[in-house]
Picture 1 (cartoon, rainbow, N blue to C red):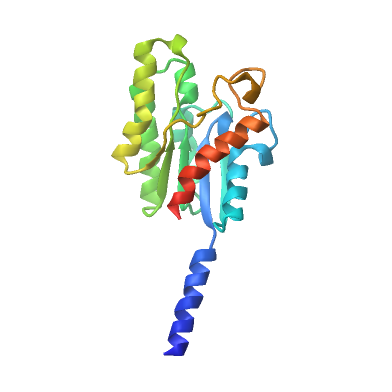
Picture 2: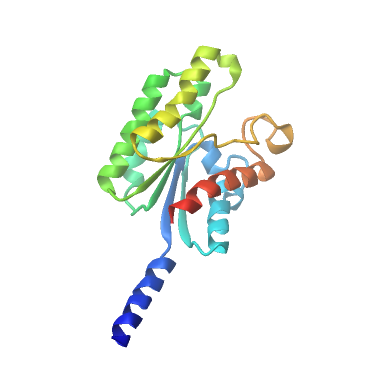
Length: 200
């Protein structure tokens, strides 16, 4: 009886300490444009999780300039490794180029379909994005709705707006006004951590 209890405790400890693989699949925001890899928010999230007893192996699959269509073409190659949590951060470049929101949504859904087909038990996280108001109210509204709709349809966890408290703040962005600086990425990491930490 004692041996059985010890065995259960041992298995529990192994399960709890086994690191989850988190795949961040995105564009220049995920890649950490203009910064070193360890300064980008995925690496910072990994550090925060470790400090809080939630070991993880973070894979940064961010690619500058990536669109939802581009992501769809390379997702199969990325999925060669096992994934426990899949964070989808794509669509911003589609919006900046004024691409049709329905096409962006179709591409994002196709990416999630591929991920779930390969790893049925994966937890999906969708990073919400917005586009500047100069794109027009109709377009910005349609674009903003893509992400909560995708999350709801796929029973995924939604990060309402990845750049919350960062977008539009000159002190938290690089000279281009689009990409977060080091301090900006720290805030983005906080936004992401609050969501991902609940998936353990």
